[in-house]
Image (cartoon, rainbow, N blue to C red):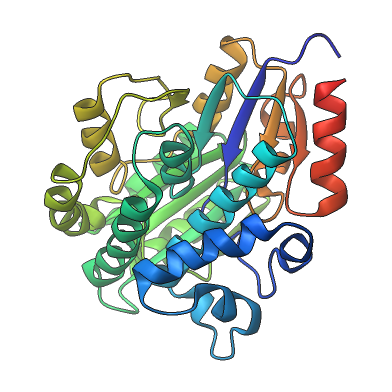
Amino acid sequence: MSEPHLAFVFPGQGSQSKGMLAEMAQEHLEVLKTFEQASAVLGYDLWALSQTDESGQIDMTEVTQPLLLTASVALWRVWQFLGGPQPQVLAGHSLGEWSALVCAGVVKFEDAIELVRARGQFMQEAVPAGVGSMAAIIGLDDETTRQCCEQAALGEVVVPVNYNAPGQVVIAGHKSAIDRAVDACKAAGAKRAMPLAVSAPFHSDLMQPAAEKLAPLIEKTDFHSPELSIVHNVNAKTEADPDAIKKLMIQQIYQPVLWVDCVRALAGLGVNAAVECGSGKVLNGLMKRIDKSIKSYSTDAIAAINSAVDELNA
């Protein structure tokens, strides 16, 4: 590989799993210290909850969001401890954008924990349980998926919200409209169109009430200019002004995640290696489908993070 021009990418909801980072915590005290920091803000033991998860709480949005942020920041700190090379640019998928903000020095970790807990709570409250839904559409081009949503809306909300990879789009909106759109996408030739096990229609217009509630909390939080560039979900561009970043993070709640455009923007900045800093390997898989020229690395297992550090430092 030519000289690595490195990006760090941070995953969003769906990357959580019971027992996550258990092996890493045995090797690196930094993991438990980071979870202790988050627990002090949250008022409950986030590490214990993530390891036992006796009642499925880690899938509740207001728990999932702080959990994944904490996991990503913990792994970022492990990477620094191991002497891994610094990335030139960061990007995060949905919630993962908050991890990027923390690691770029835009917002303090404790402040971000407060904000993402509120973000999860407000997103959950925005739409009553059972009213909203999301579905993954595989094997249709973006425009056909958009057209199917328009046909299926019938006065309700159903829109593309995550452009995850070519031919892989997630739609969100009212459950009845999602059901109609799934049928329309299948009829249009989708390989798969399946509802997702999520608790709210994230990144759709139905999330506007959540954005309105979170806005004043974001406004009163100290944001700083990023020490590392971040490609943002809303427009796939970088932004240096802290007040403009605040606006992007409010818009991000109800606007689509332009992940394909974000990865292409990374490639346009010369990125040829990307480290997924967080639990799981979801973004690695998407990266391969968007741009095979970017080599992907993961961090959630000891062997994987050691190998990535060694290879990228070579």
